[in-house]
Length: 169
Figure 1 (cartoon, helix red, strand yellow):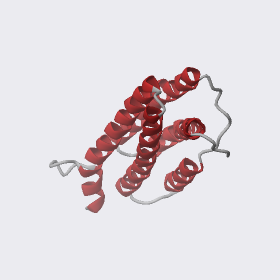
Figure 2 (tube, helix red, strand yellow):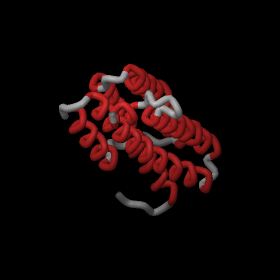
Figure 3 (tube, helix red, strand yellow):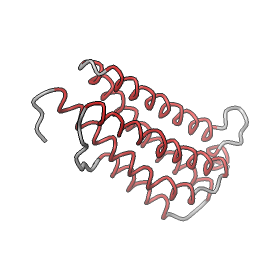
Figure 4 (cartoon, helix red, strand yellow):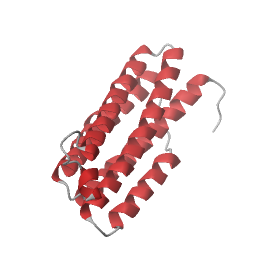
């Protein structure tokens, strides 16, 4: 890596995000298959569609807007999160507890993406790349929504039917 300008850093961040999204797109079907809770499986599959159809497409569009080709980059942060998710997928035990662990893994991925998209958006704004910043904010909003949905699914919000209350019984 060589950063002479903030523009170099922005491009690197976008490459890292593209790698992270691609890894997540590969992991989500496995997470969905490992889930025993139907709503959790649906949530993972919905986020998979969102990732493939919107997040990755937006990132590729940003490279076009910036007149750049993405270099092959491997997101080490997401790779670690995905490896932990894979350990959960391979685990055995109480299905509800495993679902709670899968939600935790998914939320770690969401929080990583939220931090990365927020940073990239701030850099794009500073550089005057208004449309790139807007696209980053769109994805940031959907990542935040996904995290909130996972929290509601985990906690069950007043219903005692959430994954965590079931796992605690």
